[in-house]
Length: 459
Image 1 (tube, rainbow, N blue to C red):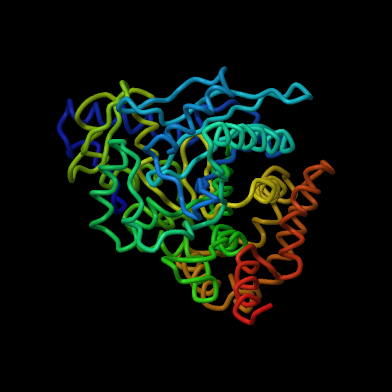
Image 2: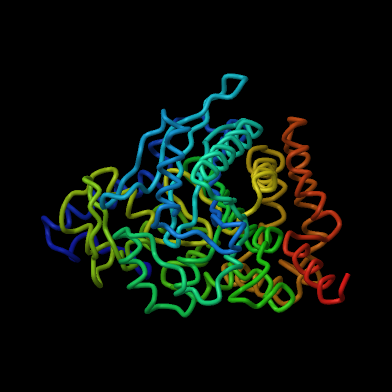
C-alpha cells in the first residue's frame, strides 16, 4: 500500500467506511473529469479569470477598508445601483459581493462574480468563455461602473493591480473583512507560517482556470501547468514594495515567496505530481490527509474543524455535492484541481495584461500542437525541479537556468508556442501586450524599479 493510501477494509469500521468511500468517490469523480462531457478537445476549452485588486483612495494615497460610509461595502451597495440585474451575496448581514452576467455587442454572455478576499481585495471572477475580447470587455465594463459608483459617493478611488499592497507598512494594519471564513483562516494560518498575514491581507493574484480532460491526458495537462508555474510567477512579477521596502529592495517574485512561507502542508507542488502513477485518486488522497481548517455546509454556514483532517471529516456523514466542492478549495497548491484546473501563480495585472496573460495560457493549453510542444519542453521535470526553478528565477532573474535551459531561451520557445496556438488575430494582439515585454527581457516589476531609480537620481 502506498504512503497515505486508504486501507478500505479496516481504517474506520463498516458504516463509517461506507460513508467515507461515498465521499471519497464523489471527490475523485469531480477530479477525474468523470462528470464532464465526453469528446474533450483542447481547442474547445474555455477560460475563466479570477483577478484580485486593491481599492485605493487617490486623494489620500492609501487603501480603502471594508467598513465606513465610503468603505468597500458602501461601494458595493452603490455599485448595485448600476448593476441592478446582479444578485447580492451576503454574509453575516454584510454585502460581500454581486453575481450576474453581461452581454456583449456580439451577443456573447459572460458571467461575472464580484467578491472580496480577506483584506478587502476586490475580486472579479469572469467567464468561463472562449471569447477573450468579451472577457476583457466585461472586466472593463465593471471597472467603469465602479468608477461611476465611487464618484457618486464623493470619492476618488481606483482599482490597483499589483501583487502586494504598496501602501502597507505592516500587514496587521489591514483589518480583516468581517466574515467567519477569514477569521478562522487567519487564526490557523497565523500559526503555520510567518507570512500568512501578508498573504491574506496584502497579496493580489491573477488566477486562470481551464477545463481539463479525463484520465491520463488530464494529469499530463496538470503536470505541464505545474512545471510552467514558476516561469509565469517570474514573468508576471508585479510588486513595487513589500512592507515599505521600495522597488529596488523588494525581492523578485515576492508574492510566491510569501506563499512559500505560509503552510507547506497545503501549498506548493502536490507530492508525486510528476510520478508515472499520479492521478485524480492520488490528488484526492493528498487532499484528504490535510487539515481542513474550516467547513462550509450546504446551508452556507462556516465552522472550524479543529485539528481534524479532511479524511476524518469525510467519515462523519454523507456530504452534498456543494460541500465536496468546498473541500477542494481548502488547499492552495500551485495548480489546484476541482471541476477546472486553476493556475494560481501570476501576480495581479492590469486588465489588458491579465487578459494577455490568459491568452498566453490559451495559446499553449487550448491548441493540441502547442500543448504537445509544451509537453516536450517539460517532459523530464520532477517535483524538486519545480521548487528549484522558482528559487533560481528569484535569485538570478533573466540569468537563471531552468529545467536545463537558459530562461530567456525557454521563454522565447513558450511565447512562440502560444503565438502559434492563437488562431484569432484579436487574441494574438491581446497576448502581444504582455508578450512583447517578455520578448525584450522585461517583466511588470521592472517599470517600478526604473521609476524609483529615476527618482533617486533626480530625473
